[in-house]
Each structure stands twice: as structure tokens, then as C-alpha cells.
Image (cartoon, rainbow, N blue to C red):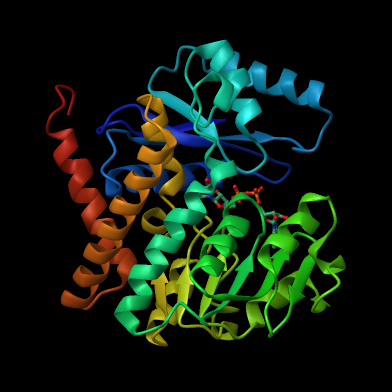
Length: 340
Ligand code: NAD
């Protein structure tokens, strides 16, 4: 299923998600989030999203058949440019480009900037965290970090934060949580996970169930897995100063209100996790990896600063400020269109 939410800014860019539990509602909400994200990032693209029902770990030849079938179905949907998301990767985008001539997040060999390999979204997330930490007087060296989801976003965010001196005190994946107050070695943990072993089998720290990541005391809590993991029912369990949304829509609106009321700074998904799509837009225009990193750093820092200043000035949440900013940009883009 494909949702093209808005094309005022240009053809919609949005990921292709494959999971056994995706839903129509999820696709609509994620597509809207992409419209806001692309507009907020100042990209000449609208927002869209695709979901495919299926186990992403199915045999590769089956997956290729499914993805090529999906690509054939969207061949003439020229207003939609697919990109990778949970359950799909560069190879999948290569198959789609082969069928349609349109996709971003391609393998390097056919002109792609490998955004998940270089950690584009994690890099941008850490740029946003750096700006936010400065505003609340949190020093990144020594700051404690807990990350839910240790995939393309989570593991690179951990790496870039460790480079700034922060300490990874817990990480989780779909099988459980590993927690070590003294800190986990990120490179070693990534190597462990890349070898196909669950985080809970890591020899350092304490293995806990996957939901326990919510209770880990930290300074920066990063959701980098699934939507709606923080709700009104569990928001009060978070003991942190910043929630930096690596995942899309990881907190419900009620949860964000509750966190704001407790003074927790929540960096909205479509501002903080725009690194991947900024990278994709650079790739689409045949830019280089260095240009992509520079664009991510500049845009995410600037947007985070503007959003946090506007939220403080108007006494609202960063999300409300960010939505107003993005909607104003979509509206101005729409005014250039004959069909408005
Ligand atoms: P991924 O598939 O590489 O990693 C997801 C990780 O989450 C895996 O480690 C998985 O084991 C873990 N996970 C799944 N369910 C979990 C659960 N219930 N509890 C804890 N961990 C769980 O995916 P990704 O590319 O890192 O994307 C993660 C999130 O970030 C998604 O919401 C995605 O839409 C969003 N996002 C990704 C990018 C990107 O560039 N990859 C960009 C923007 C937003």
C-alpha cells in the first residue's frame, strides 16, 4: 500500500516499510510525518510512505519477487520516490530503481550514498541532540544514553554520541535490553549484534526484558524502533532530560504533553531524524557523501535551534512549533502550484 500525502513541495519521498504487523493507519500517519519532515528540512519534496505485509527475513529470492512486484505496481506513480525503511535496504531500492527508474537510498555501485551504512539519520539525530543539550546546559561528555532499537538509526546514534564522550548505559532490540551503568563499548556491541547475536547475550552488563529500556535512568533517551512505544500509560516511567526521537512517531500526543509537563525536552521525530531523507535528496541530485553530511549537519542544527527558540518564545512544545514551521513551508510551496 502506498500513501502520497502531499506534493506541494515536489514529488513525495518516503520509505518502504516491510513488517508482518504494518497497518493502513500507520502508513497514513507516516506519510503525513514525511510531508512535515521534508518541508521542515527545506527539501523540494512532498511526503509519502509505503507498507508491505511480510516477514523481512524471508528468503532473498522471495523478497526480490515481492519487491519487484511492488515496484511494477507503482511504476507510473511518478509523484512518489521510494526509499528504504524498516525491513528494506539498499538492495531492495536497487530492485525498485531497476523496475521504475526512481528510488533513493541506492547501493553505492549504482549511484547511491549508503545512508544506513554511513549512519545519516544517527548523525543528524546527534546534531539535534547537541543543540538541545546546549540549551538545557547538559554536557554531552559524560551524558548517559539509553537507546531503544539498535538498528541503522540506533547503533549509529550510539557511535556518534560516544565520539562526543557520552556513555551508552543501555540498548535494546526486539529480543531484550542490555544495561550497564558503567557504560557499554559501542563498537564491540555493534560487532556482537552484527554477528547475529541478541543484545541480551552480550557478556557485559545485565540482560533485561525489552520493555525495561523504558525504566533506565539516563540523560538522553532515544527511541529508534517502532511507533507509539511511549504512551500516557508509561511516559512517567521515563527518567531522562531529553527524548530524541530517532523513530517515527514513537510517542503519542498525550505522552509528549506529559513529558513536557515534567520538563523533559522532546525533540520531534521529523526535525531530529531528517538525516536520512536529507541524504536521500542529496543523492537524488547526484551529490556526494561529504555534501550529504554537510547538508544534514547544517539543516538539522538550524531547524532544531529555530524550533526550540520558537517553542520557548510562544510557550508551546517543540512539536507544536515544528508543525507550525513545516505547515507554513508546505503552504508557501503550494502557492507556487497551478493546481492549488
Ligand atoms: P532497523 O530495522 O535497522 O532497526 C530497528 C531496530 O529496532 C532493530 O534493532 C530491532 O531489533 C529493534 N526493535 C524492533 N522492535 C523493537 C521493540 N519492540 N523494542 C526494542 N527494539 C525493537 O530500522 P531503522 O532503520 O534503524 O529504523 C528505526 C526507526 O527509525 C523506524 O521507526 C524508522 O521509521 C525510523 N527512521 C529510520 C531512518 C533511517 O534512515 N533508517 C530515518 C528516519 C526514521
